[in-house]
Image 1 (cartoon, rainbow, N blue to C red):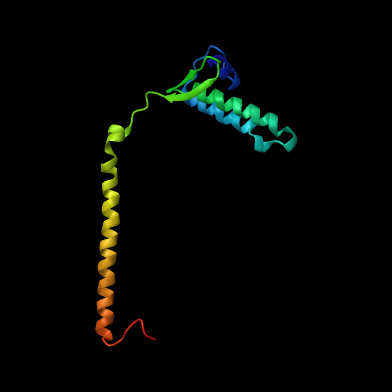
Image 2: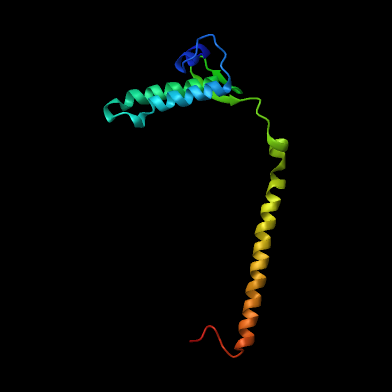
Length: 134
């Protein structure tokens, strides 16, 4: 889908340059008007095709998304560009996992020590009692 078609589908002038917030607002309005769940079953297929066109127009006009066009004129994939990864991106997976690992190991250690403490208290209260016998 070309940019002009997308702008017209979302209600903008063909040569206009809407901001991302304007595109988002127009998409929400059009999506609400054409959502297939709002139509009876007999008109649902037409509504689905209109909804798909509006969704495609929205993805076409989103900033930071570049669509690649194949030789047949169809879109092969969506390539996101210009989106920074937080704090170095994929290089910090180990740093993200360390706090989680500390929480898990701490819970296991504290749970194990409290279970051991409870077993010792029970043994002090009744030393001859075997928990496996009736």
